[in-house]
Image 1 (cartoon, rainbow, N blue to C red):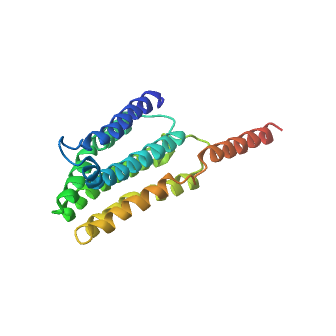
Image 2: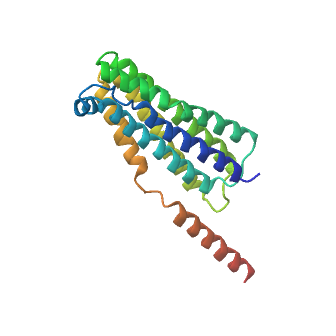
Image 3: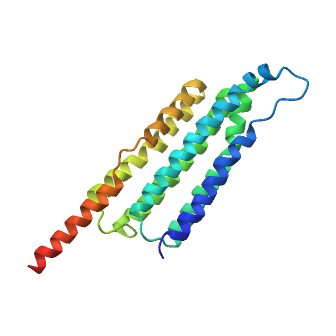
Length: 214
């Protein structure tokens, strides 16, 4: 089957998860100094920004992935559902991380928990691509094998860095948070040129067909 329904369902889950993040920022109680209370919410603001960047980067790369994956089967649907299960879960570790920094206790455990969830999300992203790319079974035929391997290596960066950040978080949670931010800024930066790649390979294929006809 084609990817239309999978992408539509995935977009809905991403939209709900990224919206739920703001619900973890609690309104200050009444009869308090509003300005001071709002300033004291900075850990919640930080956790919100980090998770918004994380979900945004994952959504962008999910969209980019399905520019190349043009068919789905039962196994890929299952992998995608498990991946989305963790995306929908992400507001919870976000709240745990913010609360730990609010209380200034258990920051290493909270940061490691958050990073561990991101590691598993990265593993599922990589698994989806590797399954689809194995034998070029679900990929656009215009995508070259070399480019498919290159994209697969790029997807590996996420789970590797997040796994490292999980260990780092147990010693230096703030450094782990910085790793989250920098990694997702890297993924948000446009660099793959998917559209131009497909266009170029498609033009090459058409030129090859013309040559054979001649």
